[in-house]
Length: 565
Image (cartoon, rainbow, N blue to C red):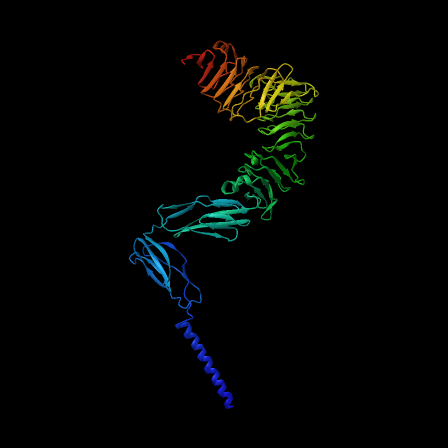
């Protein structure tokens, strides 16, 4: 028994001795763990006179032997520090240093007299963002020399984040962003939707309207990336039943829109300014609307609702329509032709106004009515197949042209489907039109800024047709060689960079307003007498301003007066 007690006592003494020895080694030598780094939660800050703030020092590694932090101020007349607590004393800048085991970290402290904010205003009251979109909430604070910082917050969390005013959309929903400075604050709302459209609750409380697309206007999203929109069939668990005014107005790169079956009302201005929109597709089970080749009609396809502004190529009128609606294709600049069936009897007012790429059109035999201005602005409509009893003629002017100005720009009227088209395009990009009596240069698809026009077409002389180079803003100089006999109305009008034209003496006829540029140099390859002998429309030089004519026998101003060389 005594032997066991002795052994136990010896073991106890050994354990105590070892523990004391290890502690002594760590404290007094051999096993000391030194501090490797000291970091502060801020490396610079601004503090008001009489205001306090606290710095936090992090000492590593955690097992360091001595982690005691000593705080010092480089200039205690500017700011004092005690255990990390800094107090601003007077205006100026000083350094606050935290030291542990010889390792230090410094924070630059600027002390100044504070100017409290009297009010703060978030400029935009609401934002709508696509999921993943970003925008910035701009603020106005009074007075302008305020010294406090704006603190941003958002509720509920998870819908957007806010960082110094920059809002980033995370998930679908609605949140309130608050900006606070001193004891003043202001708020704005942010709605995040799948398609970037704001949906507004209707008065019935049971449905929504797709309203203005503020997302594209207020966010930093590259609009060129927004090419497709699919209108939601429901929002917040309720159906989307209508599309409001200008719903897609900011989406200039938009090419297609899909409309669900739930939508039964569409404001026709919803696609305003969507000049690149090529098609609109409506769900097959929609009770009010249908789409054919990207064009929206009523369900029975007897009336047009709207045509996308960027629709391209040749469009076909559905067999169920007997009248092309008023303004149906107005200003659809990418349409190159229209196919009308024999059942079409009327073309509405301004139906094709501004369709400047239609070159040829066939008027079916049962056509009885063409509304006013139906083809006004169709400056490239050179050829008309008139199978009807309407008395369509070429030429005239905007005041006397009949049947919606359909013949205003036409160079030829054909009366049977079997007659071949007179349109031909050369390898150089020049389009010529041949009638029974004349050949016309009607268009140019090249990109040369200083073109020299062809001397002939298939060996024949030709005329430059009306509006052939109208609004070609890349032209700077044009040479009109021999075998060109006439320059038609507005042939080079609105070519803003055109400053030099050389005209052969073979030209014997000028139409109205062939040039509308000022300060032009016209080089005429003939005498002043030959120039005066050209048959000129009385408005041939309207809107030209000053210009100079260089003839083979001298230089003359616009009034025919000789200019000294």
